[in-house]
Length: 447
Image (cartoon, rainbow, N blue to C red; front, side, top):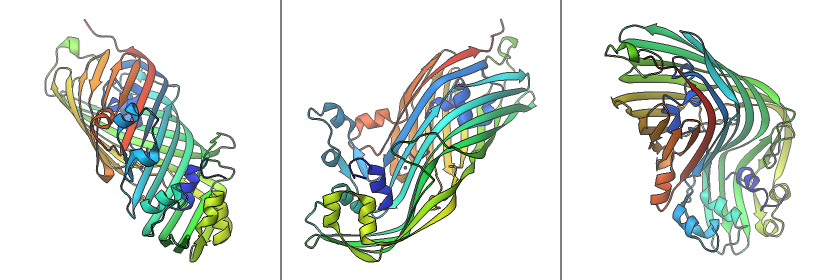
């Protein structure tokens, strides 16, 4: 297993957030988001602006780290290609974090059952990678195969990491609960059938070390547990021999409708609120992987790093220098359960501003658990039936502020929650992008 081909193992096994943060940033607050809105709140399935909304394919990718920052303009202008080692700004600490999230929304649809109820069916494939409290200096030297003439030491506490890939089919049901002159309330629930492709998980409660450059030795203390589900290979994820599980989302949306609208505007083809407040708990559930392999390394030893330089084989380096015990366990990997809150205000016709908070309900230091990055998103938008334009500003955990832009033109959606900040800042710590194609069938407007 060579270091150049297995960067994830380099990160995870030695212990050093695209975490499952928010997918489709900006789009999901649009009243014409359709099936995309159900990702954050299943109550969006009912009283929508659509008779039917059919998603063909949508892809969202999100990732970053508080260890490094990238200047996107340097990448664009680089004549000799981008070199990660020399062209990034590194900020190593004893508790760096790395995160990756990929969310593919496959064929999905929603439609009305009756004037007060609607259903939807969503298909998704997701992959999430979390790595917390990692020594950035150790990670840097591992990446360089300890090619350094300087001594260094580190002290990391509660190092945890989880990579998990799974598919899900969701049945979404929503119903109008209150519909009076000024008050409107709807609720929704999403029941998920999960198919887990597998995962990797790592944990070290306390991991310290001292590198002696003269003697090329690494003296360490602590222990490291590394586990993997049966036959899982993170470098070639295959959705075979899947493991079943179940999950759920639940949410509610309230609308304040202070003005009695003209008859021509009372159809579901139009927004009728001045203020909208939504709340949901998403990704409740887990997948239990039987016969997972768990290896525990006793790190109270001194390792010869010159052998690592020669071979670049991480597992072999661990096996050669540390005592290990291996057991077979049933490992439950938790979904990234989160609380989602949305406040959306109509400034004037077609112009809105939303405030959205996303809070992890999982402890990031728990073994075998994915979690989202806590974040707050302010998103002004111009919204019409065929076209929407939005510019979300995200305040993300670990101190990063991201400014993005996106648009929806009927069937096509393109956007990023960080493209503008990536272009104007010298050191971007997160980046994301998404693309979607759908078939929208709108509610008829009354004449």
